[in-house]
Image (cartoon, rainbow, N blue to C red; front, side, top):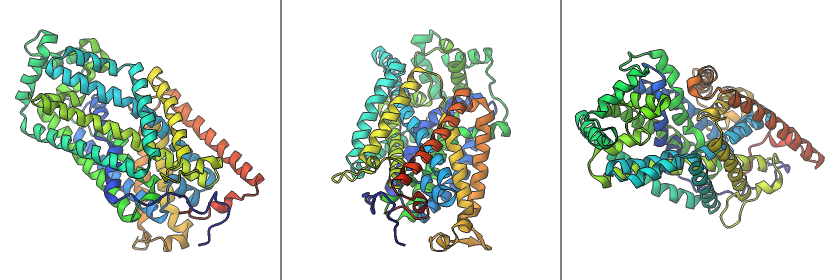
Length: 531
């Protein structure tokens, strides 16, 4: 098909050099074992919710998410992800506004996750090692790493380093990812072995011995649970399937992002096979790890103990009898008396956070680059460095935005962990609608797409889209009406609406500008973006 002359140029300048294994590792880092810390921590807000069954539910629905995006990526094998699908299938304005919405919230998450390197990476790592070794200096450093100033300083440094890494080229980024992926997987394997071979009694004895200098009690473990119960914590709550369903938004926050590699499909080799392998593989493998962490953690640490410590941290941190925040990774450091092994596991947890932020960063740069190639940003943002083959200006744009969000997160309470997922949930829902109608709205293109599979005459991608739309509608409902998702604050909801309005303004301003330049952008959105 002849490309219209209205594209910024006739070739993107990006190179296909990303393998299926790279896609798998990328999506596993995006899902991130590190986010299980949030999942285990906020679980206490859902009395009776089953960690394991909620994760299983999330894995199942994430398979639909992964398949919808993998098939759309195969049909439109270009960088830009949702932006490309929705502008070509639904409507250009709707597609751009939703893509802008996704982009701005992912820039928010780059800021959030960069700050988390200190808050949930360094702080637990230093505090955990200090707690195990009795080193007060490390405990003090860990406490500092959890402060707003440290959050901003460490996060800003990380964003600058990540920007330089992404500018240096995809090959360098994925080599960096491979090394840290090996460390992360090795440390996770060690942790799983220790969880499977350590008894509950051994953990309790080890915890009591390490906690005694701070609590002056022989049985700090039991005292912690009793203290939490006295303050309102419900121990051994009976299983509630309603609470299990409501809790699913927390594992969904992680596993639902198995689709993010769609953003750089224009740089992936064998797109259909690589994206299906990477998206489904990451959802299933990481989901299984989450289940094992939940089940083995409940057996070794005790569900009531995990809930009690989180409950006290939420309601009365001063009542905690230890000097460090009770994240799940702290408990894993107590699985062995060997300081080197404990330290290696804590470094592994830190590694998951380290790569998560830069992986999200990569997504934002390819999305805005796709806008620029369609003329929806000034031409400067379509610039690709000839040596490194990277879109330098969109990388810098994301870096500036992430630092601004980082400052807001560090020094205000306007936004929650799931604030962005509320906005992104609408994008995932509409992408599912695009998948449903694709075979009918773009019939001729669908027939030639290579994904024109049907069951009893019904397109497979439409069936998958229906299931995925239902999942995302449920998630949006929970985030809108259940405060425990921390996504429905007035500020969060106002920002979702505000960002959508800004997206509309940008689209129509750029459309007007291009029209004045003699460019009909409507022609662009009838074509597949340039290779």
